[in-house]
Amino acid sequence: MKKIINKPENVVTEMLDGLAYVHSDLVHRVDGFDIIVRNEQAAGQVGLISGGGSGHEPAHAGFVGDGMLSAAIAGAVFTSPTPDQILEAIKEADQGAGVFMVVKNYSGDIMNFEMAQELAEMEGIEVASVVVDDDIAVENSLYTQGRRGVAGTIFVHKILGHAAREGKSLAEIKDLADKIVPNIHTIGLALSGATVPEVGKPGFVLAEDEIEYGIGIHGEPGYRKESMQPSRQLAEELTGKLLEAFEAKSGERYALLINGMGATPLMEQYVFANDVASILGDAGLDVAYKKLGNYMTSIDMAGLSLTLMKIEDEAWLEALESPVKTIAW
Image 1 (cartoon, rainbow, N blue to C red):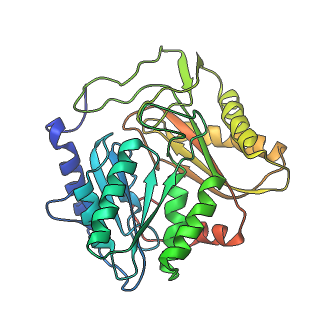
Image 2 (image 1 turned 90 degrees about the vertical axis):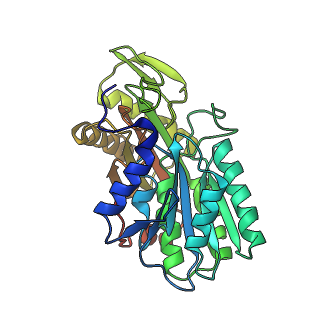
């Protein structure tokens, strides 16, 4: 294993310290906790938090800032953050109007965020949440019951963050979250596995000419392995699955997110985007918003994911287009 780290057991702490140092104009780290918080919180505004295991950078700390998250919690690599860490993030985010939690659909995340919510409510903080389950590749996986929460979570951060900045109440944000999450679908593929620093070897191995469709962001198994194919065929597979899941019809409006998994060059992501554009155009879809880059990675996995969000309300598009001050958006 070759990685630019010191001791594997210190990688999360040192990463967060480095992030807070470089981006001190936007965020800071809470002393004694693996939490990144906005420097400027808005009094009377609903706080918005998210988090999960480390290894998915820039998620979630990269989306802390004006117009998106109030705070983000980083667990150990590929490990859910603990309830005490989440509780502290809730306290940091609370500005008197309650706190909303965006939770990805993994058993450990759900359990720990729910425990933290109960503890916060005992201290008089009103808390609500949504569980994001956008991955259509498989129904049940290594860490989930039902579909996994993956890169589509970033669209949830963006739309809910805009709503919070606009002064929406906790109940209004909960209602909005429950509407947008079912309209977000994601599917991914891998060319290679991710190496967890404390393990020192890839979580799974693919042959030199092999790919796997439907992998998860922790290296969970997908639904099919095949020989490496041209970008156009990869795009047809992933886009076809998404259009089928949506039962998409010509003229419908969508937002698009192409997400690198950590080791896929932008050159390849843009080639893939060109193929996706052609396929969506042939389907007659109106792609009203587009985003490409590394947003929710899997350490050094080579691969990418494709997210579509059906835009059922013009306000959702306005929220996606609204300016923010974060590290990674």
